[in-house]
Image 1 (cartoon, one colour):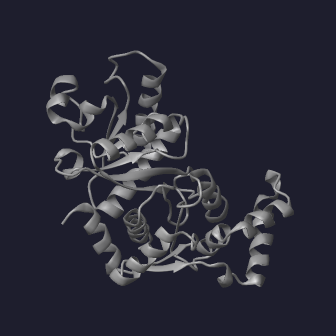
Image 2 (cartoon, rainbow, N blue to C red):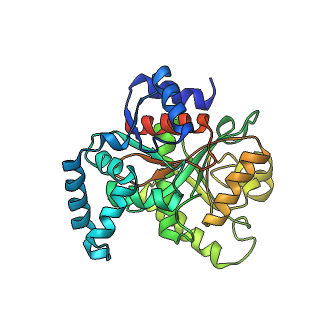
Image 3 (cartoon, rainbow, N blue to C red):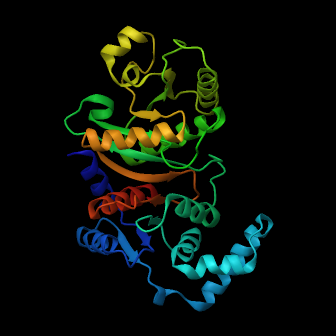
Amino acid sequence: MDTIERIRKQARAEQKTIVLPEYDDARVVEAARIIEKEGTARAVLLTRDMVDPKELERYIAEFYEMHMAKDLDLAAVRALFEQDTLYYAAMMTRENKFDGLVAGASHTTPEMARAAIRCIGVDEHITLVSSCFIMVVPNSTLGDNGTFIFADCGIIPEPNSRQLACIALSASELASKVLNITPRIAFLSYSTKGSAKTKSQEKIAEALSSLKEMAPDILADGEMQVDAAIEPEVAKIKYPNSPVGGRANILIFPNLEAGNIGYKLVQRLGNARAVGPLFLGLKKPASDLSRGCSVEDVVDVVAATAVRAQ
């Protein structure tokens, strides 16, 4: 059984309710039909006629109270809630009326991230919202039989050392919960353990130290070139004493450019399945979709979100 089917099977074992506010996107509508048919989750297409006017007014008032110090006047808040059902769905998820939120087929990642962060809120345990992709590379023994987590690929442009550590910690928790694998983390760079002296090297060393303080038993190393991180034979040459040993299954990219380029290269050139972006560090599970997503992509992301909600 491959990784994607395992995720779907795990989602079916304990059905959760996932809200899909993009009810007018044909791909999302078809995905909801498949999800319901296969029993992956209870998929709710939140249409405008499902919005309760009294609840809408309550949500607008609550949201305004939460964010009034951030220069959002009441008219601006009302516009957010009335342009579509995304913010309404996010507030319902905040109140546990849904177990998770999936959108992004017709919203940009910044739009989706703002709605999730503003409404659902940031988990105090992580203190930072980032994102990741579950990458499944066919016919590969690298990572965890071809399965990796790439982070951050969608939220934080230039993470500092503390942010890199938080990204790694939240990605490792997702690996354990959704993939049921032992996290092996590599902080990636263009150099391996000091082969080039740069500020990036210092930042990654600080990130590794911070991560070890947060989770002393976690298996992590860096800075590492990607070949030393995932190829055991290369690791023997470039970095023979690394505890990761060329077997990393979580790749932490130094910045958003590298992460976004990296996942798309592997997806397109390696014919990999990319599940996500899955937001990390929120109080409730929420996931983004690429605006170029397929129906199958939506089903996969809903399944992963449902498992996170279990």
